[in-house]
Image (cartoon, rainbow, N blue to C red):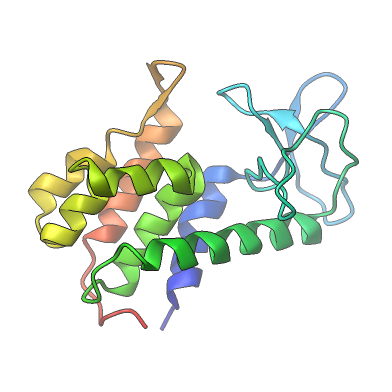
Length: 176
């Protein structure tokens, strides 16, 4: 049985990918010995590894940062997930299952915890989840609202939101 964190990683990794800047373009990292350099994501934000935009020490990623290894990229991702999960649990009803928590965690990883947290107070996604976590008709469009970058919908974000929502709908035992 997969843990919440493992389910979240299964959502996050394929959508974030592992990319590195090269002298000419952006390349997918395929070898364990390949160094990973910062690059600009589709929104123009400096990113490294699995979508890391802010290092665990709170410093934003910059173009001039030293390259990292795959192991370091994974370490950054796991740190980010742990922080988001700690914050997210403060806003979630106890009856959510592992898949529901993991889907919200993947969304938080992508859009940023502060942005997701704001949906609690303005009758957005976290508000709806707290009102009725199984009201899929209400929750689905709230998940799928986060498909834009610079005002334009991105196919990759549409696919990610579909995957997250489909994971959210899965019935499993309650999370721990």
